[in-house]
Image 1 (tube, rainbow, N blue to C red):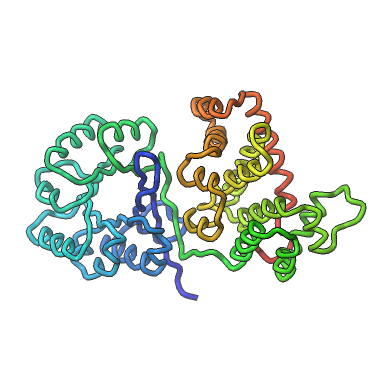
Image 2: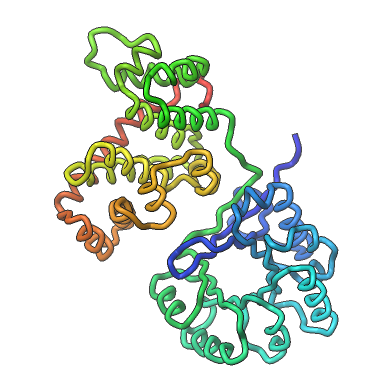
Length: 415
């Protein structure tokens, strides 16, 4: 088996929190929380090489990749390996500005590559680079906010590109940067870097996704009975779930048809979604799985007196898949390609808009204990504090009970 390849990526978002790009970062292992760089050339080359190995189409999903380059990497032939339309090369603040550097940037720009100045502090020596770069990145954690505002005002007189604030760690800093004219943002306020190995949808997960698509399209139980019967692991889990969920039955459920008749298509879809989200219990995603299930149930409970049964089911899916990326280790956009969802679900997950967005926002604010946001989003759906508290307790209890029902049987193959 070949060596695994590692990267980290951190989202860069616009003022509406919509994904604009990823910064790709060097990691020496999947457990790394920082770069631990001893050789900048090696780090830059490995980021480029690992991006190629993982595949820029999968890794970026149509978004830009921002990649740090030191002087040696910038001068190497490696920078031409990635397609220009995919990348923006960040010139590190340690790179000396020389005629050779300027000539190299001009050469790569003619090939279609774009550039950013990293950790820009408006030193006079970097001013010749401004006409050749598309982005200026400002480290807003390392300098006083007033200094950031001053640099932006100064640069706007001569720089026609766009600004990116990095290390944004609070809403206050985000709002200050946005109000100062910065267009893009990255930092812990939005998302921490996500470590990636060479990951893809596993065969078992793909089987679940295919079944979910069949369930959404079919009208008769028989259309999904045979695909289920051909998958021994899913059959075992379905029978276990049906018997556990209906423990008052006089007779045990022994066949797929009996189980499907008992639970119906809507419940089958929900069960498959749960299975997909919880089928890979690892130390890194076990907590995310519980959070996702609880969030989905809370969204559903809050919708019970406000929306019809179908919409309640869709609220559950919205909450569950709001943590799809850390759970399934694939981008949300890729999941939506594999598993088309109703438009209100997509609106809430991707754009934070539409009828389900207030429910999802309220559930997330409740998890954070953000009382200001709880009050705001509760008002959007006319929900009282008492109702939220009761729903939270019910959702937690439901998750605890469900964890026993959908957990893999001892020795059972993972789905």
